[in-house]
Image (cartoon, rainbow over all chains, first blue to last red):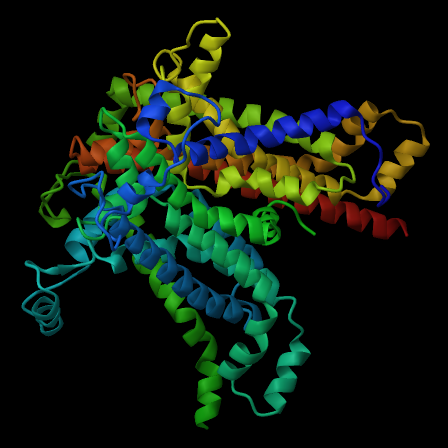
Length: 311
Length: 303
Protein backbone atom coordinates (compact mmCIF):
# COMPACT_ATOMS: atom_id res chain seq x y z
CA UNK A 1 0.00 0.00 0.00
CA UNK A 2 1.34 3.40 -0.88
CA UNK A 3 2.34 5.98 1.66
CA UNK A 4 -0.01 8.76 0.62
CA UNK A 5 -3.27 9.02 2.47
CA UNK A 6 -6.21 7.66 0.58
CA UNK A 7 -9.61 9.28 0.59
CA UNK A 8 -11.81 7.37 2.98
CA UNK A 9 -15.54 6.95 3.22
CA UNK A 10 -17.20 9.32 5.74
CA UNK A 11 -18.68 6.34 7.61
CA UNK A 12 -15.15 5.21 8.20
CA UNK A 13 -14.36 8.39 10.10
CA UNK A 14 -17.58 8.07 12.04
CA UNK A 15 -16.47 4.59 13.10
CA UNK A 16 -13.08 5.93 14.16
CA UNK A 17 -14.64 8.62 16.31
CA UNK A 18 -16.97 6.05 17.86
CA UNK A 19 -14.06 3.74 18.66
CA UNK A 20 -12.04 6.52 20.24
CA UNK A 21 -15.03 7.60 22.30
CA UNK A 22 -15.57 4.05 23.45
CA UNK A 23 -12.00 3.45 24.51
CA UNK A 24 -11.36 6.83 26.15
CA UNK A 25 -14.92 7.61 27.28
CA UNK A 26 -14.93 5.72 30.59
CA UNK A 27 -11.57 7.23 31.54
CA UNK A 28 -12.78 10.73 30.67
CA UNK A 29 -15.93 10.14 32.66
CA UNK A 30 -13.90 9.21 35.70
CA UNK A 31 -11.69 12.25 35.17
CA UNK A 32 -14.69 14.59 35.07
CA UNK A 33 -16.36 12.96 38.05
CA UNK A 34 -13.24 13.26 40.14
CA UNK A 35 -13.78 17.03 40.04
CA UNK A 36 -17.41 16.83 41.09
CA UNK A 37 -18.84 16.83 44.58
CA UNK A 38 -20.76 13.72 45.57
CA UNK A 39 -23.96 15.76 45.53
CA UNK A 40 -23.41 16.58 41.86
CA UNK A 41 -22.55 13.00 40.97
CA UNK A 42 -25.63 11.57 42.63
CA UNK A 43 -28.15 14.22 41.66
CA UNK A 44 -27.03 13.78 38.09
CA UNK A 45 -26.77 17.34 36.88
CA UNK A 46 -25.30 15.66 33.88
CA UNK A 47 -22.86 16.92 31.32
CA UNK A 48 -20.40 19.67 31.97
CA UNK A 49 -22.64 21.98 33.99
CA UNK A 50 -20.96 21.82 37.35
CA UNK A 51 -18.46 23.73 39.39
CA UNK A 52 -15.15 21.89 39.25
CA UNK A 53 -13.53 21.41 42.62
CA UNK A 54 -10.32 19.82 43.78
CA UNK A 55 -11.88 18.95 47.12
CA UNK A 56 -11.89 15.23 46.31
CA UNK A 57 -8.17 15.28 45.67
CA UNK A 58 -7.62 17.18 48.90
CA UNK A 59 -9.64 14.63 50.85
CA UNK A 60 -7.74 11.77 49.27
CA UNK A 61 -4.36 13.26 50.05
CA UNK A 62 -5.27 14.76 53.42
CA UNK A 63 -2.45 13.06 55.31
CA UNK A 64 0.32 14.63 53.21
CA UNK A 65 -1.10 18.09 52.55
CA UNK A 66 0.75 20.83 54.43
CA UNK A 67 -2.45 22.74 55.26
CA UNK A 68 -5.63 21.98 57.21
CA UNK A 69 -8.80 21.23 55.31
CA UNK A 70 -12.00 23.08 56.22
CA UNK A 71 -14.43 20.49 54.93
CA UNK A 72 -12.83 17.64 56.85
CA UNK A 73 -12.42 17.35 60.58
CA UNK A 74 -10.78 13.94 60.54
CA UNK A 75 -8.40 12.47 58.00
CA UNK A 76 -9.78 8.96 57.62
CA UNK A 77 -8.33 7.96 54.29
CA UNK A 78 -4.56 7.90 54.32
CA UNK A 79 -4.02 7.83 50.59
CA UNK A 80 -0.93 9.98 50.72
CA UNK A 81 1.02 7.41 52.65
CA UNK A 82 -0.24 4.67 50.37
CA UNK A 83 0.99 6.62 47.37
CA UNK A 84 4.43 6.83 48.86
CA UNK A 85 4.37 3.07 49.52
CA UNK A 86 3.23 2.39 45.97
CA UNK A 87 5.96 4.62 44.58
CA UNK A 88 8.70 3.01 46.66
CA UNK A 89 7.59 -0.51 45.78
CA UNK A 90 7.08 0.16 42.08
CA UNK A 91 10.30 2.11 41.57
CA UNK A 92 12.57 -0.18 43.56
CA UNK A 93 11.21 -3.33 41.99
CA UNK A 94 11.52 -1.81 38.51
CA UNK A 95 15.13 -0.80 39.02
CA UNK A 96 16.16 -4.09 40.58
CA UNK A 97 14.35 -6.15 37.96
CA UNK A 98 16.05 -4.23 35.20
CA UNK A 99 19.54 -4.56 36.67
CA UNK A 100 19.22 -8.25 37.46
CA UNK A 101 17.37 -9.04 34.25
CA UNK A 102 19.87 -7.15 32.13
CA UNK A 103 22.83 -9.02 33.58
CA UNK A 104 21.12 -12.38 33.16
CA UNK A 105 20.05 -11.63 29.60
CA UNK A 106 23.57 -10.57 28.69
CA UNK A 107 25.06 -13.74 30.15
CA UNK A 108 22.51 -15.88 28.36
CA UNK A 109 23.23 -14.30 24.99
CA UNK A 110 26.98 -13.89 25.10
CA UNK A 111 28.00 -17.01 26.91
CA UNK A 112 25.43 -19.25 25.25
CA UNK A 113 24.05 -20.98 28.30
CA UNK A 114 20.63 -21.83 27.13
CA UNK A 115 18.97 -21.41 23.82
CA UNK A 116 16.41 -18.72 23.25
CA UNK A 117 13.79 -21.43 23.19
CA UNK A 118 14.41 -22.31 26.81
CA UNK A 119 14.06 -18.71 27.90
CA UNK A 120 10.94 -18.02 25.89
CA UNK A 121 9.47 -21.27 27.14
CA UNK A 122 10.07 -20.37 30.75
CA UNK A 123 8.80 -16.83 30.15
CA UNK A 124 5.58 -18.32 28.94
CA UNK A 125 5.43 -20.71 31.87
CA UNK A 126 5.74 -17.84 34.33
CA UNK A 127 3.25 -15.74 32.42
CA UNK A 128 0.87 -18.63 32.84
CA UNK A 129 1.01 -18.54 36.66
CA UNK A 130 -1.83 -16.36 38.00
CA UNK A 131 -1.10 -14.17 41.03
CA UNK A 132 -4.00 -15.94 42.76
CA UNK A 133 -2.06 -19.20 42.56
CA UNK A 134 0.92 -17.59 44.26
CA UNK A 135 -1.27 -16.15 46.99
CA UNK A 136 -1.35 -19.21 49.27
CA UNK A 137 2.31 -20.21 49.18
CA UNK A 138 3.61 -16.66 49.29
CA UNK A 139 1.40 -15.86 52.25
CA UNK A 140 2.66 -18.92 54.10
CA UNK A 141 6.31 -18.56 53.20
CA UNK A 142 6.63 -14.84 53.76
CA UNK A 143 4.96 -15.12 57.16
CA UNK A 144 6.57 -18.28 58.48
CA UNK A 145 9.63 -19.44 56.61
CA UNK A 146 11.39 -16.36 55.25
CA UNK A 147 12.07 -15.02 58.70
CA UNK A 148 15.09 -14.18 60.75
CA UNK A 149 14.96 -15.37 64.34
CA UNK A 150 14.72 -12.34 66.62
CA UNK A 151 17.29 -13.94 68.94
CA UNK A 152 19.90 -14.08 66.17
CA UNK A 153 22.41 -11.34 65.60
CA UNK A 154 20.82 -9.76 62.54
CA UNK A 155 17.30 -10.23 63.86
CA UNK A 156 17.99 -8.48 67.11
CA UNK A 157 19.80 -5.72 65.25
CA UNK A 158 16.71 -5.06 63.14
CA UNK A 159 14.35 -5.30 66.12
CA UNK A 160 16.48 -2.86 68.13
CA UNK A 161 16.67 -0.33 65.34
CA UNK A 162 13.21 -0.51 63.81
CA UNK A 163 11.09 -1.76 66.70
CA UNK A 164 8.30 -4.29 66.45
CA UNK A 165 7.80 -7.66 68.06
CA UNK A 166 8.25 -11.28 67.04
CA UNK A 167 10.59 -12.68 64.47
CA UNK A 168 11.69 -10.49 61.59
CA UNK A 169 9.65 -11.67 58.60
CA UNK A 170 9.36 -10.61 54.97
CA UNK A 171 5.59 -10.21 55.21
CA UNK A 172 4.53 -6.67 56.01
CA UNK A 173 7.69 -5.09 54.65
CA UNK A 174 8.29 -3.29 51.39
CA UNK A 175 11.05 -5.77 50.55
CA UNK A 176 8.64 -8.70 50.80
CA UNK A 177 6.33 -7.24 48.18
CA UNK A 178 9.24 -6.11 46.03
CA UNK A 179 10.76 -9.60 46.02
CA UNK A 180 7.68 -11.26 44.60
CA UNK A 181 7.25 -8.53 41.98
CA UNK A 182 10.82 -8.99 40.81
CA UNK A 183 10.30 -12.73 40.52
CA UNK A 184 7.07 -12.25 38.58
CA UNK A 185 8.63 -9.85 36.10
CA UNK A 186 12.13 -11.24 35.63
CA UNK A 187 11.44 -13.82 32.91
CA UNK A 188 9.66 -11.32 30.71
CA UNK A 189 12.38 -8.72 31.19
CA UNK A 190 15.16 -11.20 30.46
CA UNK A 191 13.35 -12.39 27.41
CA UNK A 192 12.71 -8.97 25.91
CA UNK A 193 16.21 -7.69 26.67
CA UNK A 194 17.68 -10.81 25.12
CA UNK A 195 16.16 -9.93 21.78
CA UNK A 196 17.79 -6.50 21.97
CA UNK A 197 21.21 -7.73 23.13
CA UNK A 198 21.38 -10.24 20.28
CA UNK A 199 21.39 -7.27 17.91
CA UNK A 200 24.46 -5.63 19.49
CA UNK A 201 27.36 -6.49 17.17
CA UNK A 202 29.95 -8.70 18.78
CA UNK A 203 32.80 -6.84 17.10
CA UNK A 204 31.93 -3.77 19.09
CA UNK A 205 32.47 -5.61 22.34
CA UNK A 206 35.62 -7.26 21.11
CA UNK A 207 37.02 -3.89 20.13
CA UNK A 208 36.33 -2.60 23.63
CA UNK A 209 38.01 -5.65 25.11
CA UNK A 210 41.04 -5.09 22.88
CA UNK A 211 41.29 -1.63 24.32
CA UNK A 212 41.58 -3.22 27.74
CA UNK A 213 38.04 -3.10 29.13
CA UNK A 214 37.02 -5.84 31.55
CA UNK A 215 33.79 -7.80 31.16
CA UNK A 216 31.92 -5.50 33.53
CA UNK A 217 33.13 -2.38 31.74
CA UNK A 218 32.15 -3.84 28.38
CA UNK A 219 28.71 -4.51 29.73
CA UNK A 220 28.09 -1.15 31.35
CA UNK A 221 29.82 1.14 28.87
CA UNK A 222 29.18 -0.59 25.55
CA UNK A 223 26.15 -2.84 25.78
CA UNK A 224 23.86 -0.91 28.11
CA UNK A 225 23.73 2.33 26.13
CA UNK A 226 22.88 0.39 22.97
CA UNK A 227 19.84 -1.39 24.35
CA UNK A 228 18.06 1.65 25.78
CA UNK A 229 14.81 1.09 23.81
CA UNK A 230 14.58 -2.43 25.17
CA UNK A 231 15.23 -1.17 28.67
CA UNK A 232 12.44 1.38 28.28
CA UNK A 233 9.93 -1.26 27.21
CA UNK A 234 10.96 -3.60 30.01
CA UNK A 235 10.82 -0.79 32.57
CA UNK A 236 7.32 0.25 31.59
CA UNK A 237 5.96 -3.27 31.79
CA UNK A 238 7.57 -3.96 35.15
CA UNK A 239 6.47 -0.65 36.61
CA UNK A 240 2.95 -1.17 35.39
CA UNK A 241 2.61 -4.56 37.06
CA UNK A 242 4.20 -3.44 40.31
CA UNK A 243 2.14 -0.25 40.41
CA UNK A 244 -1.19 -1.86 39.56
CA UNK A 245 -1.01 -5.17 41.39
CA UNK A 246 -3.54 -5.73 44.16
CA UNK A 247 -3.85 -9.32 45.32
CA UNK A 248 -0.34 -10.20 46.48
CA UNK A 249 0.20 -6.76 47.94
CA UNK A 250 -2.97 -7.09 49.98
CA UNK A 251 -1.84 -10.45 51.32
CA UNK A 252 1.66 -9.28 52.20
CA UNK A 253 1.24 -5.72 53.41
CA UNK A 254 0.41 -4.57 56.89
CA UNK A 255 -1.03 -1.29 58.13
CA UNK A 256 2.05 0.72 57.19
CA UNK A 257 2.86 -0.79 53.83
CA UNK A 258 -0.53 -0.66 52.14
CA UNK A 259 -0.46 0.34 48.48
CA UNK A 260 -3.06 2.43 46.66
CA UNK A 261 -4.96 -0.44 44.96
CA UNK A 262 -5.57 -1.98 48.39
CA UNK A 263 -7.07 1.23 49.74
CA UNK A 264 -9.29 1.60 46.69
CA UNK A 265 -10.64 -1.93 47.06
CA UNK A 266 -11.16 -1.52 50.80
CA UNK A 267 -13.13 1.66 50.30
CA UNK A 268 -15.19 0.19 47.49
CA UNK A 269 -16.51 -2.79 49.36
CA UNK A 270 -18.31 -0.66 51.88
CA UNK A 271 -21.97 -0.04 51.31
CA UNK A 272 -21.82 3.70 50.94
CA UNK A 273 -19.22 4.56 48.34
CA UNK A 274 -17.85 8.08 48.28
CA UNK A 275 -17.69 8.26 44.52
CA UNK A 276 -15.92 11.58 44.19
CA UNK A 277 -13.02 10.75 46.48
CA UNK A 278 -12.60 7.22 45.21
CA UNK A 279 -12.53 8.44 41.62
CA UNK A 280 -9.97 11.08 42.46
CA UNK A 281 -7.79 8.35 43.94
CA UNK A 282 -8.38 6.12 40.93
CA UNK A 283 -7.36 9.00 38.71
CA UNK A 284 -4.16 9.55 40.68
CA UNK A 285 -3.40 5.83 40.41
CA UNK A 286 -4.08 5.90 36.68
CA UNK A 287 -1.95 8.95 35.90
CA UNK A 288 1.54 7.35 35.76
CA UNK A 289 0.49 4.57 33.36
CA UNK A 290 -1.38 7.11 31.22
CA UNK A 291 1.72 9.31 31.01
CA UNK A 292 3.86 6.33 30.02
CA UNK A 293 1.37 5.35 27.38
CA UNK A 294 1.25 8.81 25.87
CA UNK A 295 5.02 9.19 25.70
CA UNK A 296 6.21 5.67 25.00
CA UNK A 297 3.41 3.90 23.17
CA UNK A 298 5.89 2.67 20.57
CA UNK A 299 7.93 0.79 23.16
CA UNK A 300 4.80 -0.61 24.76
CA UNK A 301 3.57 -1.95 21.46
CA UNK A 302 7.01 -3.44 20.80
CA UNK A 303 6.84 -5.23 24.12
CA UNK A 304 3.33 -6.41 23.53
CA UNK A 305 3.81 -7.76 20.06
CA UNK A 306 7.25 -9.24 20.70
CA UNK A 307 5.82 -12.56 21.75
CA UNK A 308 3.36 -13.36 19.05
CA UNK A 309 4.55 -11.55 15.94
CA UNK A 310 7.97 -12.27 14.59
CA UNK A 311 9.86 -9.77 12.49
CA UNK B 1 45.74 -15.36 36.29
CA UNK B 2 43.23 -13.50 38.41
CA UNK B 3 41.63 -11.80 35.44
CA UNK B 4 41.35 -15.16 33.69
CA UNK B 5 39.39 -16.63 36.61
CA UNK B 6 37.26 -13.51 36.74
CA UNK B 7 36.53 -13.82 33.04
CA UNK B 8 35.55 -17.44 33.43
CA UNK B 9 33.29 -16.67 36.36
CA UNK B 10 31.63 -13.63 34.79
CA UNK B 11 28.65 -15.43 33.25
CA UNK B 12 27.88 -17.13 36.54
CA UNK B 13 28.14 -13.86 38.46
CA UNK B 14 25.80 -12.25 35.94
CA UNK B 15 23.27 -15.03 36.15
CA UNK B 16 23.39 -15.69 39.88
CA UNK B 17 20.99 -12.99 41.18
CA UNK B 18 18.30 -13.90 38.68
CA UNK B 19 18.61 -17.61 39.40
CA UNK B 20 18.51 -17.08 43.16
CA UNK B 21 15.45 -14.87 43.03
CA UNK B 22 13.55 -17.10 40.65
CA UNK B 23 14.29 -20.16 42.75
CA UNK B 24 13.47 -18.49 46.04
CA UNK B 25 10.41 -16.47 45.14
CA UNK B 26 8.80 -18.50 42.38
CA UNK B 27 9.86 -22.13 42.17
CA UNK B 28 10.04 -22.73 45.90
CA UNK B 29 6.59 -21.19 46.52
CA UNK B 30 5.08 -23.30 43.76
CA UNK B 31 6.58 -26.45 45.26
CA UNK B 32 5.44 -25.33 48.68
CA UNK B 33 1.92 -24.94 47.34
CA UNK B 34 1.87 -28.41 45.81
CA UNK B 35 3.14 -29.86 49.07
CA UNK B 36 0.57 -27.86 51.03
CA UNK B 37 -2.31 -29.05 48.87
CA UNK B 38 -1.94 -32.51 50.42
CA UNK B 39 -2.31 -31.17 53.94
CA UNK B 40 -5.01 -29.90 56.25
CA UNK B 41 -3.67 -26.41 56.61
CA UNK B 42 -4.95 -23.54 58.73
CA UNK B 43 -3.40 -20.04 58.42
CA UNK B 44 -2.39 -20.07 62.09
CA UNK B 45 -0.22 -23.16 61.59
CA UNK B 46 3.13 -23.44 59.93
CA UNK B 47 3.21 -26.06 57.24
CA UNK B 48 5.31 -28.39 59.37
CA UNK B 49 2.60 -28.66 62.02
CA UNK B 50 -0.12 -29.67 59.57
CA UNK B 51 -1.54 -33.10 59.05
CA UNK B 52 -1.07 -35.10 55.86
CA UNK B 53 -4.45 -35.81 54.31
CA UNK B 54 -3.50 -37.25 50.93
CA UNK B 55 -5.71 -36.30 48.03
CA UNK B 56 -8.73 -35.48 50.16
CA UNK B 57 -8.53 -31.76 49.41
CA UNK B 58 -8.77 -32.56 45.71
CA UNK B 59 -11.65 -34.99 46.20
CA UNK B 60 -13.42 -32.56 48.47
CA UNK B 61 -13.28 -29.87 45.79
CA UNK B 62 -14.58 -32.22 43.17
CA UNK B 63 -17.71 -32.82 45.24
CA UNK B 64 -18.05 -29.18 46.25
CA UNK B 65 -20.98 -27.68 44.35
CA UNK B 66 -19.72 -24.12 44.67
CA UNK B 67 -16.29 -25.07 43.29
CA UNK B 68 -17.93 -26.63 40.27
CA UNK B 69 -20.15 -23.59 39.87
CA UNK B 70 -17.12 -21.36 40.02
CA UNK B 71 -15.28 -23.51 37.48
CA UNK B 72 -18.26 -23.26 35.16
CA UNK B 73 -18.38 -19.48 35.60
CA UNK B 74 -14.66 -19.24 34.86
CA UNK B 75 -14.95 -21.28 31.67
CA UNK B 76 -18.01 -19.37 30.54
CA UNK B 77 -16.27 -16.06 31.21
CA UNK B 78 -13.00 -16.99 29.53
CA UNK B 79 -14.51 -18.56 26.44
CA UNK B 80 -17.09 -15.87 25.76
CA UNK B 81 -14.64 -13.06 26.44
CA UNK B 82 -11.96 -14.47 24.16
CA UNK B 83 -14.27 -15.33 21.30
CA UNK B 84 -15.96 -11.94 21.24
CA UNK B 85 -12.63 -10.14 21.56
CA UNK B 86 -11.10 -12.17 18.74
CA UNK B 87 -13.96 -11.38 16.38
CA UNK B 88 -14.05 -7.65 17.16
CA UNK B 89 -10.28 -7.25 17.40
CA UNK B 90 -9.45 -9.02 14.15
CA UNK B 91 -12.38 -7.35 12.41
CA UNK B 92 -11.20 -3.90 13.45
CA UNK B 93 -7.64 -4.69 12.42
CA UNK B 94 -8.78 -5.74 8.94
CA UNK B 95 -10.90 -2.61 8.71
CA UNK B 96 -8.27 -0.17 9.93
CA UNK B 97 -5.28 -1.60 8.07
CA UNK B 98 -4.90 1.38 5.77
CA UNK B 99 -2.50 4.24 5.59
CA UNK B 100 -4.10 6.70 7.94
CA UNK B 101 -2.43 9.81 9.16
CA UNK B 102 -3.38 9.48 12.84
CA UNK B 103 -2.82 5.75 13.16
CA UNK B 104 -0.20 5.99 15.87
CA UNK B 105 -2.42 8.32 17.92
CA UNK B 106 -5.24 5.84 17.52
CA UNK B 107 -3.10 2.96 18.72
CA UNK B 108 -1.92 4.99 21.70
CA UNK B 109 -5.50 5.71 22.73
CA UNK B 110 -6.45 2.08 22.28
CA UNK B 111 -3.79 0.75 24.63
CA UNK B 112 -4.84 3.09 27.45
CA UNK B 113 -7.44 0.68 28.88
CA UNK B 114 -4.83 -2.06 29.17
CA UNK B 115 -2.30 0.08 30.98
CA UNK B 116 -4.59 1.39 33.70
CA UNK B 117 -4.79 -0.56 36.95
CA UNK B 118 -7.43 -3.32 36.86
CA UNK B 119 -8.68 -1.96 40.16
CA UNK B 120 -9.39 1.38 38.51
CA UNK B 121 -11.05 -0.29 35.53
CA UNK B 122 -13.34 -2.12 37.92
CA UNK B 123 -14.05 1.15 39.70
CA UNK B 124 -15.01 2.95 36.47
CA UNK B 125 -17.31 0.20 35.35
CA UNK B 126 -18.89 -0.23 38.74
CA UNK B 127 -19.77 3.45 38.60
CA UNK B 128 -21.11 3.23 35.08
CA UNK B 129 -23.22 0.18 35.93
CA UNK B 130 -24.56 1.75 39.11
CA UNK B 131 -28.37 1.24 39.24
CA UNK B 132 -29.27 4.88 39.84
CA UNK B 133 -26.09 6.97 39.48
CA UNK B 134 -24.53 5.11 36.57
CA UNK B 135 -24.42 6.52 33.08
CA UNK B 136 -25.96 3.48 31.38
CA UNK B 137 -29.16 3.48 33.38
CA UNK B 138 -29.42 7.26 33.23
CA UNK B 139 -29.19 7.20 29.47
CA UNK B 140 -31.71 4.38 29.24
CA UNK B 141 -34.11 6.12 31.56
CA UNK B 142 -33.92 9.46 29.83
CA UNK B 143 -34.66 7.63 26.59
CA UNK B 144 -37.68 6.15 28.33
CA UNK B 145 -36.49 2.55 28.13
CA UNK B 146 -36.47 1.72 31.82
CA UNK B 147 -33.42 0.61 33.76
CA UNK B 148 -31.38 -2.57 33.60
CA UNK B 149 -30.13 -4.38 36.69
CA UNK B 150 -26.56 -4.55 35.37
CA UNK B 151 -24.59 -5.90 38.30
CA UNK B 152 -27.52 -7.84 39.71
CA UNK B 153 -29.37 -10.03 37.26
CA UNK B 154 -26.92 -9.60 34.41
CA UNK B 155 -23.75 -9.55 36.46
CA UNK B 156 -21.77 -12.04 34.37
CA UNK B 157 -22.68 -10.26 31.15
CA UNK B 158 -21.68 -6.90 32.62
CA UNK B 159 -18.34 -8.28 33.74
CA UNK B 160 -17.78 -9.76 30.29
CA UNK B 161 -18.52 -6.41 28.65
CA UNK B 162 -16.00 -4.65 30.89
CA UNK B 163 -13.32 -7.20 30.02
CA UNK B 164 -14.07 -6.87 26.32
CA UNK B 165 -13.62 -3.12 26.64
CA UNK B 166 -10.29 -3.55 28.33
CA UNK B 167 -8.70 -6.28 26.23
CA UNK B 168 -10.05 -6.07 22.68
CA UNK B 169 -7.31 -3.53 21.88
CA UNK B 170 -4.70 -6.17 22.73
CA UNK B 171 -5.97 -8.44 19.99
CA UNK B 172 -6.47 -5.49 17.67
CA UNK B 173 -2.86 -4.39 18.04
CA UNK B 174 -1.40 -7.87 17.65
CA UNK B 175 -3.47 -8.63 14.57
CA UNK B 176 -2.70 -5.24 13.09
CA UNK B 177 1.02 -5.95 13.53
CA UNK B 178 0.52 -9.34 11.93
CA UNK B 179 -1.35 -7.79 9.03
CA UNK B 180 1.34 -5.24 8.41
CA UNK B 181 4.08 -7.84 8.36
CA UNK B 182 2.34 -9.93 5.71
CA UNK B 183 4.27 -10.36 2.47
CA UNK B 184 3.13 -7.57 0.17
CA UNK B 185 3.75 -9.70 -2.91
CA UNK B 186 0.94 -12.13 -2.12
CA UNK B 187 -1.54 -9.29 -1.69
CA UNK B 188 -0.36 -7.57 -4.87
CA UNK B 189 -0.71 -10.80 -6.80
CA UNK B 190 -4.22 -11.32 -5.52
CA UNK B 191 -5.19 -7.79 -6.41
CA UNK B 192 -3.80 -8.12 -9.92
CA UNK B 193 -5.73 -11.35 -10.35
CA UNK B 194 -8.84 -9.39 -9.53
CA UNK B 195 -9.69 -10.69 -6.06
CA UNK B 196 -12.32 -8.62 -4.29
CA UNK B 197 -11.76 -7.26 -0.80
CA UNK B 198 -13.60 -10.13 0.83
CA UNK B 199 -11.78 -12.72 -1.23
CA UNK B 200 -8.46 -11.19 -0.24
CA UNK B 201 -9.41 -11.35 3.42
CA UNK B 202 -10.74 -14.90 3.42
CA UNK B 203 -8.25 -16.57 1.09
CA UNK B 204 -5.06 -14.64 1.74
CA UNK B 205 -4.99 -12.40 4.79
CA UNK B 206 -6.66 -14.66 7.33
CA UNK B 207 -4.75 -17.85 6.41
CA UNK B 208 -1.45 -15.98 6.49
CA UNK B 209 -2.32 -14.40 9.83
CA UNK B 210 -3.45 -17.69 11.32
CA UNK B 211 -0.25 -18.58 13.25
CA UNK B 212 -0.23 -15.19 14.98
CA UNK B 213 -3.95 -15.32 15.61
CA UNK B 214 -3.76 -18.70 17.30
CA UNK B 215 -0.90 -17.59 19.55
CA UNK B 216 -2.79 -14.37 20.37
CA UNK B 217 -5.92 -16.32 21.16
CA UNK B 218 -4.09 -18.67 23.52
CA UNK B 219 -2.26 -15.80 25.24
CA UNK B 220 -5.52 -14.01 25.78
CA UNK B 221 -7.17 -17.21 27.03
CA UNK B 222 -4.41 -17.68 29.59
CA UNK B 223 -4.84 -14.07 30.72
CA UNK B 224 -8.61 -14.45 30.93
CA UNK B 225 -8.15 -17.11 33.59
CA UNK B 226 -6.07 -14.68 35.62
CA UNK B 227 -8.59 -11.83 35.74
CA UNK B 228 -9.41 -11.04 39.33
CA UNK B 229 -9.26 -7.43 40.37
CA UNK B 230 -11.78 -6.07 37.88
CA UNK B 231 -14.38 -8.57 38.98
CA UNK B 232 -13.51 -8.18 42.64
CA UNK B 233 -14.16 -4.46 42.52
CA UNK B 234 -17.25 -4.67 40.33
CA UNK B 235 -19.21 -7.47 41.98
CA UNK B 236 -17.03 -9.19 44.61
CA UNK B 237 -18.08 -12.44 42.95
CA UNK B 238 -21.73 -11.87 43.58
CA UNK B 239 -24.64 -11.84 43.47
CA UNK B 240 -24.49 -15.37 44.83
CA UNK B 241 -21.74 -17.14 42.96
CA UNK B 242 -22.70 -15.76 39.57
CA UNK B 243 -19.38 -14.02 38.88
CA UNK B 244 -17.08 -15.84 41.26
CA UNK B 245 -14.30 -16.97 38.98
CA UNK B 246 -11.68 -19.44 40.20
CA UNK B 247 -9.02 -16.87 41.02
CA UNK B 248 -11.48 -15.03 43.23
CA UNK B 249 -12.62 -18.26 44.86
CA UNK B 250 -9.01 -19.16 45.67
CA UNK B 251 -8.40 -15.87 47.39
CA UNK B 252 -11.69 -16.12 49.31
CA UNK B 253 -10.99 -19.70 50.40
CA UNK B 254 -7.62 -18.61 51.68
CA UNK B 255 -8.62 -15.38 53.41
CA UNK B 256 -12.28 -15.76 54.38
CA UNK B 257 -12.74 -19.50 54.90
CA UNK B 258 -9.17 -19.86 56.11
CA UNK B 259 -8.58 -23.23 54.46
CA UNK B 260 -5.17 -22.93 52.92
CA UNK B 261 -4.94 -26.63 51.96
CA UNK B 262 -8.13 -26.45 49.95
CA UNK B 263 -7.08 -23.16 48.38
CA UNK B 264 -3.76 -24.73 47.41
CA UNK B 265 -5.53 -27.69 45.81
CA UNK B 266 -7.74 -25.28 43.92
CA UNK B 267 -4.70 -23.31 42.78
CA UNK B 268 -3.30 -26.58 41.50
CA UNK B 269 -6.40 -27.30 39.48
CA UNK B 270 -6.20 -23.83 37.94
CA UNK B 271 -2.50 -24.26 37.27
CA UNK B 272 -3.07 -27.59 35.55
CA UNK B 273 -5.72 -26.04 33.36
CA UNK B 274 -3.37 -23.24 32.36
CA UNK B 275 -0.49 -25.66 31.87
CA UNK B 276 -2.62 -27.54 29.39
CA UNK B 277 -3.22 -24.33 27.42
CA UNK B 278 0.43 -23.32 27.54
CA UNK B 279 1.65 -26.72 26.41
CA UNK B 280 -0.86 -26.60 23.58
CA UNK B 281 0.57 -23.25 22.57
CA UNK B 282 4.19 -24.38 22.72
CA UNK B 283 3.34 -27.52 20.78
CA UNK B 284 1.59 -25.44 18.18
CA UNK B 285 4.63 -23.18 17.85
CA UNK B 286 6.93 -26.18 17.41
CA UNK B 287 4.58 -27.63 14.86
CA UNK B 288 4.61 -24.37 12.88
CA UNK B 289 8.39 -24.24 12.92
CA UNK B 290 8.64 -27.82 11.74
CA UNK B 291 6.24 -27.17 8.92
CA UNK B 292 8.14 -24.05 7.89
CA UNK B 293 11.38 -26.03 7.95
CA UNK B 294 9.95 -28.76 5.80
CA UNK B 295 8.56 -26.26 3.32
CA UNK B 296 11.96 -24.59 3.13
CA UNK B 297 13.74 -27.89 2.58
CA UNK B 298 11.36 -28.87 -0.19
CA UNK B 299 11.85 -25.49 -1.81
CA UNK B 300 15.61 -25.87 -1.60
CA UNK B 301 15.51 -29.35 -3.08
CA UNK B 302 13.39 -28.08 -5.93
CA UNK B 303 16.07 -25.54 -6.72
